[in-house]
Length: 397
Image (cartoon, rainbow, N blue to C red):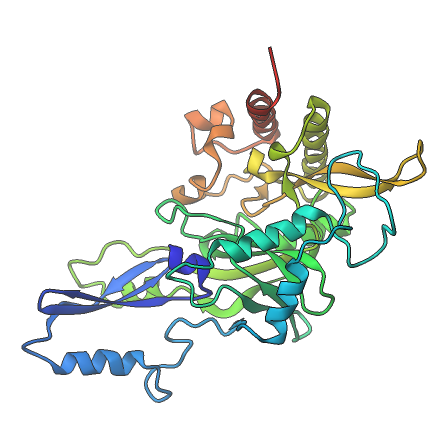
C-alpha cells in the first residue's frame, strides 16, 4: 500500500525468495498473482530469465507493462519544475490569513497571494515522504487528457491525504495540492481507482460536479478537468480468468479503472479550525443546501455524509462595516464518488457499502445494508456529523 501511495505506478513486480525457491508476483489495486515456486539451485537459468524480463528491454516488456504510468513523469532535483515547486512552497508573509473575520491588507487581487494553509499543506506534503525507502522521487508531473485531444499538466508532491486501508478500500484514493502548469495556481487533484461494475449506479464524480456547476449549485467544488486514464485498468481479473481450472484460484476481484480529477478549490477540514458553534452550524448548513440543490437538479444524493466530507473554504468579501476585504468561511460538500440516484434500487456490491463512513450512516441503514437510501437518511447523517464535531471540539459545561 505504501509503495502505491508514494509512487505513481499501475502495478509492481516483486520477487520472493524463500530458502532455495523463488517466485515472481505482480501486485496492483485489484489484487496479486503469483507464479509457482521454482528451485533456483536446481534450475539456475530461472534467475537469468526473471531479471531479463524485469530489465524492461523493448523486445521483452515495455515500461507500461512493467507498471510505469505513462501519464506521470518524475520531477528531478535541479529541473525547472522542481525549482518552481520549491519557489511556490516558500512561505510568504503577505499570504492571506484564513481565520474567519480576518481583515485583508494590501492588494486582495494579487494572484501570487494565497491562503496560508494552501502553501503550508504543499510544504508539509513535500517533507512528509522525504526519507521514505519506497520513494525514489516524491515529485511528479501528471497529465489529465481533455476532450479536445489535448492534455492538462499538473505538478504534485506526495499526497497530503490517502486511504491506508487496502483490505477495506482497494481504490487507493490519494489527494494532492497541485500546481497547474499553465497558470502556476494551486489546485486540488484527486487520483483514485474506480470500480467499473458500479457505473450503472454511481456516476463519475467529475461528471456530477460538472452538471452541478452548470446548474449553479453552490457549495460544491468547481471542476477544472477529469478523465479516466486510457488503457489503465487492472489486469488481475483477466489473469485469474485465464486460470479458472486451477484449484487454487478463488473468485476473481472486480476491475478497477484509473481516474484523475482536478478542482479549483483547496479546502481545509473545518473541524480542526472552527472556534464557535455559529461557524460549525453555518458550514454544515451550506453543505445541506448543496445536497438539497443536487437532489433538485440531478435527482442524486451524496451517500457518504461525514465530517471528512464537510469542508470549509475561505472567500474574501468586502465588509459593509469596514469597507475592507474580509475572510468569510463557507461550507463545501466534497467527495461525491459514491453518489447515486434518489430511490435507486439497483444492486450495489457489498464492497461498495464498506466505502461509506459507518459512524455516520442512518440507524435504519445500519440495520439493513440493502435499504434504499433516501433524503431522510442523508439528513440523519448530517445530524450525526454535527453532534460528533460539537461534542468533540466545542467547549461545553
